[in-house]
Length: 254
Length: 186
Image 1 (cartoon, one colour):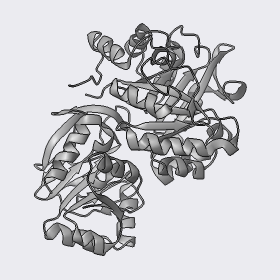
Image 2 (cartoon, helix red, strand yellow):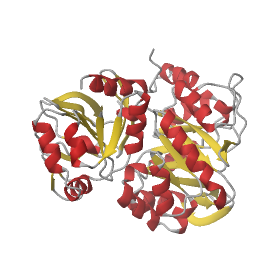
Image 3 (cartoon, chains in turn orange, cyan):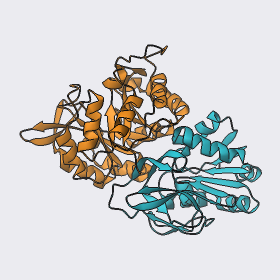
Image 4 (cartoon, chains in turn red, brown):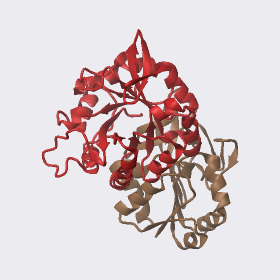
Protein backbone atom coordinates (compact mmCIF):
# COMPACT_ATOMS: atom_id res chain seq x y z
CA UNK A 1 0.00 0.00 0.00
CA UNK A 2 1.26 3.44 -0.91
CA UNK A 3 2.18 5.49 2.17
CA UNK A 4 1.24 9.08 2.90
CA UNK A 5 4.39 11.18 2.86
CA UNK A 6 5.74 13.74 5.31
CA UNK A 7 8.05 16.24 3.65
CA UNK A 8 10.04 18.81 5.66
CA UNK A 9 10.69 21.98 3.67
CA UNK A 10 13.80 24.11 4.19
CA UNK A 11 13.99 27.69 2.98
CA UNK A 12 17.50 28.37 1.76
CA UNK A 13 19.24 31.64 0.93
CA UNK A 14 22.85 31.79 -0.23
CA UNK A 15 23.32 28.16 0.73
CA UNK A 16 22.09 28.54 4.32
CA UNK A 17 18.84 27.64 6.06
CA UNK A 18 16.79 30.78 6.59
CA UNK A 19 14.10 29.95 9.10
CA UNK A 20 15.25 29.34 12.61
CA UNK A 21 15.98 25.73 13.30
CA UNK A 22 15.65 24.57 16.85
CA UNK A 23 17.99 21.63 17.26
CA UNK A 24 19.87 22.11 20.46
CA UNK A 25 22.49 19.48 19.72
CA UNK A 26 23.13 20.43 16.13
CA UNK A 27 26.43 22.23 15.64
CA UNK A 28 25.55 24.18 12.52
CA UNK A 29 21.82 24.77 12.42
CA UNK A 30 22.32 26.91 9.34
CA UNK A 31 23.66 23.99 7.33
CA UNK A 32 20.82 22.59 5.24
CA UNK A 33 22.54 19.25 4.75
CA UNK A 34 22.90 18.67 8.49
CA UNK A 35 19.27 19.63 9.05
CA UNK A 36 18.05 17.45 6.17
CA UNK A 37 20.03 14.49 7.50
CA UNK A 38 18.44 14.98 10.88
CA UNK A 39 15.00 14.86 9.29
CA UNK A 40 15.95 11.73 7.36
CA UNK A 41 16.91 10.05 10.63
CA UNK A 42 13.52 11.06 12.01
CA UNK A 43 11.84 9.21 9.11
CA UNK A 44 11.13 12.06 6.71
CA UNK A 45 9.99 10.58 3.39
CA UNK A 46 11.53 13.29 1.24
CA UNK A 47 13.09 16.70 1.72
CA UNK A 48 12.38 19.94 -0.15
CA UNK A 49 14.93 22.74 -0.50
CA UNK A 50 13.35 26.01 -1.49
CA UNK A 51 15.96 28.45 -2.72
CA UNK A 52 14.86 31.96 -1.91
CA UNK A 53 18.17 33.59 -2.82
CA UNK A 54 17.30 37.04 -4.04
CA UNK A 55 19.88 37.43 -6.77
CA UNK A 56 20.39 35.13 -9.70
CA UNK A 57 24.15 35.64 -9.51
CA UNK A 58 24.34 34.03 -6.11
CA UNK A 59 22.86 30.75 -7.22
CA UNK A 60 26.04 28.72 -7.45
CA UNK A 61 25.89 28.17 -3.71
CA UNK A 62 22.68 26.16 -4.11
CA UNK A 63 24.34 23.84 -6.64
CA UNK A 64 27.12 23.01 -4.20
CA UNK A 65 24.55 22.45 -1.52
CA UNK A 66 22.49 20.07 -3.69
CA UNK A 67 25.60 18.06 -4.51
CA UNK A 68 26.44 17.70 -0.85
CA UNK A 69 22.88 16.90 0.15
CA UNK A 70 22.47 14.30 -2.59
CA UNK A 71 25.66 12.55 -1.57
CA UNK A 72 24.57 12.29 2.06
CA UNK A 73 20.83 11.63 1.82
CA UNK A 74 19.24 8.32 0.91
CA UNK A 75 15.75 9.73 0.48
CA UNK A 76 14.49 11.84 -2.44
CA UNK A 77 15.33 15.53 -2.64
CA UNK A 78 13.23 18.16 -4.40
CA UNK A 79 14.67 21.57 -5.18
CA UNK A 80 12.63 24.64 -6.09
CA UNK A 81 13.00 28.37 -6.40
CA UNK A 82 14.22 30.56 -9.22
CA UNK A 83 14.17 27.90 -11.92
CA UNK A 84 13.57 29.63 -15.24
CA UNK A 85 14.69 27.38 -18.04
CA UNK A 86 15.35 23.83 -19.18
CA UNK A 87 19.04 24.38 -18.47
CA UNK A 88 18.40 25.32 -14.83
CA UNK A 89 16.41 22.13 -14.56
CA UNK A 90 19.22 20.06 -16.06
CA UNK A 91 21.79 21.66 -13.79
CA UNK A 92 19.81 20.89 -10.64
CA UNK A 93 19.14 17.29 -11.66
CA UNK A 94 22.79 16.77 -12.57
CA UNK A 95 23.76 17.96 -9.08
CA UNK A 96 21.73 15.02 -7.76
CA UNK A 97 18.24 16.37 -7.00
CA UNK A 98 15.46 13.91 -7.76
CA UNK A 99 12.72 16.40 -8.53
CA UNK A 100 12.62 20.05 -9.49
CA UNK A 101 9.80 22.38 -8.54
CA UNK A 102 8.82 25.21 -10.89
CA UNK A 103 6.30 27.90 -10.09
CA UNK A 104 6.24 31.41 -11.59
CA UNK A 105 8.25 30.34 -14.63
CA UNK A 106 5.63 27.68 -15.45
CA UNK A 107 2.87 30.30 -15.27
CA UNK A 108 4.86 32.67 -17.48
CA UNK A 109 5.69 29.87 -19.93
CA UNK A 110 3.45 26.79 -19.53
CA UNK A 111 5.31 25.09 -22.34
CA UNK A 112 8.29 24.78 -19.98
CA UNK A 113 6.36 22.00 -18.20
CA UNK A 114 6.06 20.07 -21.45
CA UNK A 115 9.70 20.66 -22.39
CA UNK A 116 11.14 19.46 -19.09
CA UNK A 117 8.82 16.48 -18.81
CA UNK A 118 9.73 15.36 -22.33
CA UNK A 119 13.40 15.89 -21.66
CA UNK A 120 13.73 14.47 -18.14
CA UNK A 121 10.53 12.48 -17.57
CA UNK A 122 7.45 13.61 -15.70
CA UNK A 123 8.52 11.86 -12.50
CA UNK A 124 10.93 14.71 -11.75
CA UNK A 125 8.60 17.57 -12.66
CA UNK A 126 6.93 19.14 -9.66
CA UNK A 127 4.77 22.16 -10.37
CA UNK A 128 4.38 24.35 -7.30
CA UNK A 129 1.18 26.37 -7.26
CA UNK A 130 0.33 29.14 -4.82
CA UNK A 131 -3.42 29.58 -4.42
CA UNK A 132 -5.63 32.12 -2.76
CA UNK A 133 -9.38 32.53 -2.36
CA UNK A 134 -10.50 35.66 -4.20
CA UNK A 135 -14.10 36.75 -4.88
CA UNK A 136 -15.40 33.27 -4.13
CA UNK A 137 -12.97 31.42 -6.40
CA UNK A 138 -9.46 30.00 -6.06
CA UNK A 139 -6.86 31.94 -8.03
CA UNK A 140 -3.19 31.36 -8.83
CA UNK A 141 -0.66 33.76 -7.38
CA UNK A 142 2.98 34.15 -8.42
CA UNK A 143 6.13 35.96 -7.28
CA UNK A 144 5.90 34.50 -3.80
CA UNK A 145 2.19 35.22 -3.54
CA UNK A 146 2.43 38.92 -4.36
CA UNK A 147 0.96 38.89 -7.84
CA UNK A 148 -2.38 37.57 -9.13
CA UNK A 149 -1.61 35.53 -12.23
CA UNK A 150 -5.20 35.79 -13.45
CA UNK A 151 -5.64 32.03 -13.60
CA UNK A 152 -8.24 29.75 -12.05
CA UNK A 153 -6.37 27.51 -9.60
CA UNK A 154 -8.17 24.25 -10.34
CA UNK A 155 -7.99 24.65 -14.12
CA UNK A 156 -4.31 25.59 -13.94
CA UNK A 157 -3.58 22.49 -11.87
CA UNK A 158 -5.34 20.37 -14.49
CA UNK A 159 -3.41 22.08 -17.27
CA UNK A 160 -0.14 21.36 -15.46
CA UNK A 161 -1.08 17.67 -15.35
CA UNK A 162 -1.94 17.68 -19.05
CA UNK A 163 1.33 19.39 -19.93
CA UNK A 164 3.38 16.75 -18.09
CA UNK A 165 3.63 17.61 -14.40
CA UNK A 166 4.33 14.53 -12.30
CA UNK A 167 3.24 16.09 -9.03
CA UNK A 168 1.70 19.27 -7.66
CA UNK A 169 2.90 21.15 -4.61
CA UNK A 170 -0.15 23.13 -3.60
CA UNK A 171 0.37 25.99 -1.18
CA UNK A 172 -2.50 27.98 0.27
CA UNK A 173 -1.33 31.58 0.54
CA UNK A 174 -4.23 32.19 2.93
CA UNK A 175 -2.91 29.52 5.26
CA UNK A 176 0.83 29.95 4.78
CA UNK A 177 2.55 31.09 7.96
CA UNK A 178 -0.69 31.19 9.99
CA UNK A 179 -0.37 27.75 11.61
CA UNK A 180 -4.17 27.56 11.47
CA UNK A 181 -4.24 24.27 9.61
CA UNK A 182 -4.14 23.19 5.97
CA UNK A 183 -6.67 24.63 3.54
CA UNK A 184 -8.88 21.55 3.26
CA UNK A 185 -11.36 23.06 0.80
CA UNK A 186 -8.64 24.24 -1.59
CA UNK A 187 -6.80 20.91 -1.46
CA UNK A 188 -10.00 19.01 -2.15
CA UNK A 189 -10.84 21.26 -5.08
CA UNK A 190 -7.51 20.40 -6.73
CA UNK A 191 -7.42 16.71 -5.75
CA UNK A 192 -10.90 16.24 -7.24
CA UNK A 193 -9.71 17.57 -10.59
CA UNK A 194 -6.26 16.03 -11.12
CA UNK A 195 -5.01 12.45 -11.12
CA UNK A 196 -1.38 13.03 -10.15
CA UNK A 197 0.04 13.21 -6.61
CA UNK A 198 -0.68 16.40 -4.66
CA UNK A 199 1.45 17.71 -1.77
CA UNK A 200 -0.52 19.87 0.67
CA UNK A 201 1.27 22.95 1.93
CA UNK A 202 0.60 26.05 4.00
CA UNK A 203 -0.91 26.44 7.42
CA UNK A 204 0.44 23.47 9.36
CA UNK A 205 0.67 24.35 13.05
CA UNK A 206 0.27 21.01 14.80
CA UNK A 207 0.32 17.25 14.37
CA UNK A 208 -3.49 17.37 14.39
CA UNK A 209 -3.43 19.57 11.30
CA UNK A 210 -1.49 16.86 9.46
CA UNK A 211 -3.90 14.14 10.60
CA UNK A 212 -6.74 16.40 9.53
CA UNK A 213 -5.44 16.95 5.99
CA UNK A 214 -4.92 13.23 5.41
CA UNK A 215 -8.32 12.31 6.88
CA UNK A 216 -10.25 14.95 4.96
CA UNK A 217 -8.53 15.16 1.59
CA UNK A 218 -7.08 12.80 -0.98
CA UNK A 219 -3.65 14.46 -0.88
CA UNK A 220 -0.56 12.25 -1.00
CA UNK A 221 1.86 14.19 1.13
CA UNK A 222 2.06 17.04 3.61
CA UNK A 223 4.74 19.70 3.49
CA UNK A 224 5.82 20.82 6.94
CA UNK A 225 8.16 23.64 7.97
CA UNK A 226 7.80 25.53 11.28
CA UNK A 227 6.41 22.60 13.26
CA UNK A 228 9.67 20.72 12.73
CA UNK A 229 12.07 23.64 12.53
CA UNK A 230 10.95 25.08 15.85
CA UNK A 231 11.15 21.67 17.47
CA UNK A 232 7.45 21.47 18.33
CA UNK A 233 7.36 17.94 16.92
CA UNK A 234 9.68 15.49 15.19
CA UNK A 235 8.80 13.72 11.97
CA UNK A 236 8.63 10.54 13.99
CA UNK A 237 6.09 12.06 16.40
CA UNK A 238 3.90 12.77 13.40
CA UNK A 239 4.31 9.25 12.04
CA UNK A 240 3.35 7.70 15.37
CA UNK A 241 0.20 9.80 15.48
CA UNK A 242 -0.60 8.99 11.86
CA UNK A 243 -0.33 5.29 12.54
CA UNK A 244 -2.57 5.58 15.58
CA UNK A 245 -5.10 7.42 13.43
CA UNK A 246 -5.08 4.66 10.82
CA UNK A 247 -3.19 6.63 8.18
CA UNK A 248 -0.78 4.43 6.30
CA UNK A 249 2.78 5.75 6.65
CA UNK A 250 6.39 4.67 6.70
CA UNK A 251 7.65 4.28 10.23
CA UNK A 252 11.10 3.95 11.72
CA UNK A 253 12.41 0.42 11.75
CA UNK A 254 15.19 -0.50 14.09
CA UNK B 1 34.65 -2.83 -9.37
CA UNK B 2 31.12 -2.07 -10.51
CA UNK B 3 30.33 -0.38 -13.80
CA UNK B 4 27.43 2.05 -13.65
CA UNK B 5 26.34 2.41 -17.27
CA UNK B 6 26.47 5.99 -18.46
CA UNK B 7 23.76 6.32 -21.11
CA UNK B 8 22.20 9.71 -20.38
CA UNK B 9 19.12 8.62 -18.48
CA UNK B 10 19.38 10.51 -15.21
CA UNK B 11 19.82 9.55 -11.55
CA UNK B 12 23.39 8.28 -12.04
CA UNK B 13 24.77 10.51 -9.31
CA UNK B 14 22.46 9.02 -6.69
CA UNK B 15 23.55 5.50 -7.63
CA UNK B 16 27.21 6.52 -7.46
CA UNK B 17 26.58 8.23 -4.12
CA UNK B 18 25.05 5.06 -2.74
CA UNK B 19 28.08 3.00 -3.91
CA UNK B 20 30.33 5.50 -2.16
CA UNK B 21 28.30 5.24 1.05
CA UNK B 22 28.58 1.45 0.86
CA UNK B 23 32.30 1.74 0.21
CA UNK B 24 32.10 -0.11 -3.10
CA UNK B 25 34.30 0.99 -6.00
CA UNK B 26 32.11 2.05 -8.90
CA UNK B 27 32.82 3.82 -12.16
CA UNK B 28 30.39 5.65 -14.39
CA UNK B 29 31.26 4.49 -17.89
CA UNK B 30 30.14 3.78 -21.42
CA UNK B 31 33.49 2.29 -22.43
CA UNK B 32 32.93 -1.32 -23.65
CA UNK B 33 36.48 -2.30 -22.68
CA UNK B 34 35.90 -1.25 -19.09
CA UNK B 35 32.45 -2.86 -18.95
CA UNK B 36 33.88 -6.17 -20.23
CA UNK B 37 36.22 -6.37 -17.26
CA UNK B 38 33.73 -6.02 -14.41
CA UNK B 39 31.55 -8.65 -12.81
CA UNK B 40 28.88 -6.23 -11.62
CA UNK B 41 26.93 -3.88 -13.87
CA UNK B 42 24.29 -1.39 -12.79
CA UNK B 43 21.82 -0.04 -15.32
CA UNK B 44 20.34 3.06 -13.73
CA UNK B 45 17.64 5.07 -15.39
CA UNK B 46 14.73 7.44 -15.23
CA UNK B 47 12.90 8.70 -18.27
CA UNK B 48 11.36 6.78 -21.10
CA UNK B 49 11.87 3.21 -22.41
CA UNK B 50 12.46 4.15 -26.03
CA UNK B 51 15.02 6.84 -25.14
CA UNK B 52 16.92 4.39 -22.94
CA UNK B 53 17.08 1.76 -25.69
CA UNK B 54 17.94 4.36 -28.33
CA UNK B 55 20.84 5.63 -26.20
CA UNK B 56 22.16 2.12 -25.47
CA UNK B 57 22.09 1.45 -29.21
CA UNK B 58 23.69 4.78 -30.13
CA UNK B 59 26.49 4.31 -27.64
CA UNK B 60 27.13 0.80 -28.96
CA UNK B 61 26.49 -0.81 -25.58
CA UNK B 62 24.02 -3.58 -26.38
CA UNK B 63 26.68 -5.97 -27.66
CA UNK B 64 28.89 -5.64 -24.60
CA UNK B 65 25.92 -5.98 -22.23
CA UNK B 66 24.84 -9.19 -23.99
CA UNK B 67 28.38 -10.49 -23.82
CA UNK B 68 28.72 -9.70 -20.12
CA UNK B 69 25.36 -11.29 -19.40
CA UNK B 70 26.33 -14.48 -21.26
CA UNK B 71 29.63 -14.83 -19.46
CA UNK B 72 27.87 -14.48 -16.10
CA UNK B 73 28.47 -10.91 -14.96
CA UNK B 74 25.75 -9.77 -12.57
CA UNK B 75 23.46 -7.12 -13.95
CA UNK B 76 21.24 -4.92 -11.78
CA UNK B 77 18.66 -2.69 -13.45
CA UNK B 78 17.09 0.13 -11.46
CA UNK B 79 13.67 1.63 -12.31
CA UNK B 80 13.80 2.23 -16.09
CA UNK B 81 17.02 0.21 -16.06
CA UNK B 82 14.97 -2.73 -14.79
CA UNK B 83 12.21 -2.22 -17.35
CA UNK B 84 14.57 -2.44 -20.32
CA UNK B 85 15.70 -5.90 -19.12
CA UNK B 86 12.36 -7.14 -20.49
CA UNK B 87 11.41 -8.01 -24.07
CA UNK B 88 9.31 -5.04 -25.08
CA UNK B 89 8.18 -1.64 -23.84
CA UNK B 90 5.29 0.56 -24.89
CA UNK B 91 6.39 3.96 -23.55
CA UNK B 92 6.97 6.30 -26.47
CA UNK B 93 5.89 3.62 -28.96
CA UNK B 94 6.59 -0.11 -29.08
CA UNK B 95 10.32 -0.69 -28.52
CA UNK B 96 12.37 -3.85 -28.17
CA UNK B 97 14.16 -4.16 -24.83
CA UNK B 98 17.26 -6.17 -23.93
CA UNK B 99 15.12 -9.29 -23.61
CA UNK B 100 16.98 -10.79 -20.63
CA UNK B 101 13.67 -11.36 -18.87
CA UNK B 102 10.41 -12.63 -20.35
CA UNK B 103 7.49 -10.22 -20.56
CA UNK B 104 6.58 -6.69 -21.59
CA UNK B 105 6.45 -3.28 -19.94
CA UNK B 106 3.25 -1.27 -20.18
CA UNK B 107 1.33 1.51 -18.45
CA UNK B 108 0.03 0.59 -14.97
CA UNK B 109 -3.62 -0.30 -15.49
CA UNK B 110 -5.29 1.59 -12.68
CA UNK B 111 -7.71 4.44 -12.20
CA UNK B 112 -5.58 5.64 -9.25
CA UNK B 113 -3.09 8.48 -9.60
CA UNK B 114 -0.06 8.08 -11.83
CA UNK B 115 2.88 8.20 -11.41
CA UNK B 116 2.89 5.60 -8.65
CA UNK B 117 5.00 7.91 -6.50
CA UNK B 118 6.17 7.44 -2.95
CA UNK B 119 6.95 4.74 -0.40
CA UNK B 120 5.27 1.38 -0.80
CA UNK B 121 5.96 -1.86 0.98
CA UNK B 122 7.68 -5.04 -0.13
CA UNK B 123 8.39 -7.91 2.27
CA UNK B 124 11.50 -6.32 3.80
CA UNK B 125 10.05 -2.85 4.36
CA UNK B 126 9.11 0.35 2.57
CA UNK B 127 10.90 1.46 -0.59
CA UNK B 128 10.58 4.50 -2.84
CA UNK B 129 8.82 4.14 -6.19
CA UNK B 130 8.29 6.65 -8.94
CA UNK B 131 7.02 5.27 -12.26
CA UNK B 132 3.95 5.01 -14.47
CA UNK B 133 4.94 1.92 -16.44
CA UNK B 134 5.45 -1.54 -15.01
CA UNK B 135 6.81 -4.93 -16.00
CA UNK B 136 4.54 -7.87 -16.55
CA UNK B 137 4.04 -10.02 -13.48
CA UNK B 138 5.88 -13.30 -14.23
CA UNK B 139 7.63 -16.15 -12.40
CA UNK B 140 10.77 -14.01 -12.26
CA UNK B 141 9.07 -11.57 -9.89
CA UNK B 142 10.38 -12.19 -6.37
CA UNK B 143 8.91 -9.11 -4.65
CA UNK B 144 5.88 -7.05 -5.53
CA UNK B 145 4.06 -3.96 -4.29
CA UNK B 146 0.32 -3.35 -4.50
CA UNK B 147 -1.01 -0.14 -5.97
CA UNK B 148 -4.40 0.77 -7.36
CA UNK B 149 -5.52 -2.84 -7.36
CA UNK B 150 -2.46 -3.95 -9.34
CA UNK B 151 0.40 -6.22 -8.31
CA UNK B 152 3.50 -4.35 -9.40
CA UNK B 153 6.73 -6.33 -9.78
CA UNK B 154 9.19 -4.64 -7.42
CA UNK B 155 12.16 -7.01 -7.61
CA UNK B 156 12.71 -9.40 -10.49
CA UNK B 157 15.48 -11.94 -10.74
CA UNK B 158 16.58 -14.64 -13.11
CA UNK B 159 20.05 -16.16 -12.90
CA UNK B 160 22.58 -13.31 -12.99
CA UNK B 161 20.03 -10.64 -13.94
CA UNK B 162 18.18 -8.65 -11.29
CA UNK B 163 16.00 -5.56 -11.36
CA UNK B 164 14.37 -3.18 -8.88
CA UNK B 165 11.40 -1.11 -9.99
CA UNK B 166 11.85 1.15 -6.97
CA UNK B 167 14.95 3.23 -6.25
CA UNK B 168 17.07 1.33 -3.69
CA UNK B 169 19.49 4.27 -3.68
CA UNK B 170 16.64 6.50 -2.47
CA UNK B 171 15.01 4.03 -0.09
CA UNK B 172 16.88 4.64 3.14
CA UNK B 173 18.19 1.64 5.07
CA UNK B 174 15.89 -0.88 3.38
CA UNK B 175 17.19 0.05 -0.06
CA UNK B 176 20.76 0.18 1.15
CA UNK B 177 20.47 -3.40 2.40
CA UNK B 178 19.16 -4.65 -0.94
CA UNK B 179 22.03 -3.03 -2.82
CA UNK B 180 24.70 -4.10 -0.37
CA UNK B 181 23.44 -7.69 -0.49
CA UNK B 182 23.68 -7.62 -4.28
CA UNK B 183 27.15 -6.12 -4.11
CA UNK B 184 28.27 -8.74 -1.58
CA UNK B 185 27.16 -11.44 -4.03
CA UNK B 186 29.54 -10.23 -6.74
